[in-house]
Image (cartoon, rainbow, N blue to C red):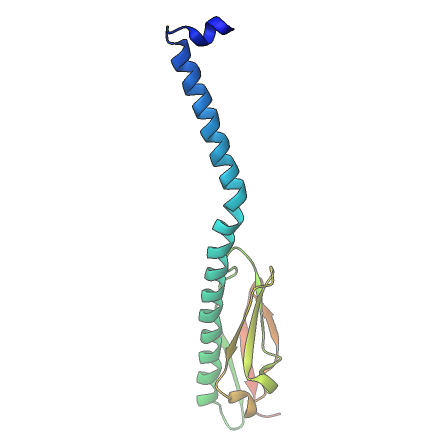
Length: 146
């Protein structure tokens, strides 16, 4: 074995290459295992927060538009489309707090949540309900005859 490391006939160069390769592979493996959560989780949280803001603003705009064209004695219904997943996760839109806090609350299955205001319309018309992004049909309706 001693002769193997002192031989200059390309064996020592090969052994040096193998040792350095193993050292760097081990180093990069340890770095990946140490920082993989931070490198993946941080951008995912940012994407979820930004997309939740967009979806909440879309819902707020939809409610505002419906409020502007509400019939005095009738029914108005509107179908809307939301993404099935945000950041690879399903989510819910909760409007039950709209009567008191004037907000829509969006919450992902991992616990990320965002609140979006709805312009004070909930004091005029009752807004409540919860919808999941995994449902097929999404509909918002208002009946002024009640």
